Image (cartoon, rainbow, N blue to C red; front, top):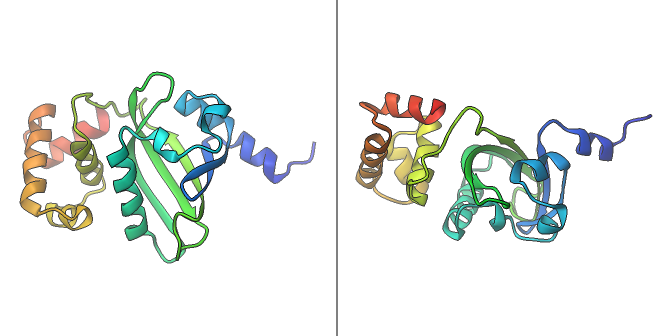
Length: 181
């Protein structure tokens, strides 16, 4: 059987999604499995369905616009939501905006479920989840503050909350616990 692009899309070992104006245009079976959703629940719907909250959906959209590289690429680890259960889980997302000057116009995105390696404490707030993801990327309080348009001191307060919740003695210990717990 000759392989074509559709076959490659369907058989990819990661979840793939095509979007236009942050609406899901198409996805493969891997993505449906990751988010525990039937195709009919996603196609034509907003990507907002896959996020823990509307706020996180909006903030991530703003971060993508602000952080695209010259080729329109973006990647991060973020917390997402399974449709069937509402369970929150860590997911690596990477992709490309096909029109870098209009990042949400059209894009292709890959999703890798990290929950087998990284567990999420359910009691984290949306902002704590966002800061945890940026700490994992290795950003300092100053850089996180710039990215989120908050003060570095506010970032430090959230970091302290995360350290308490995870029983971490230092920032490197916190990052380690975020990565392996």
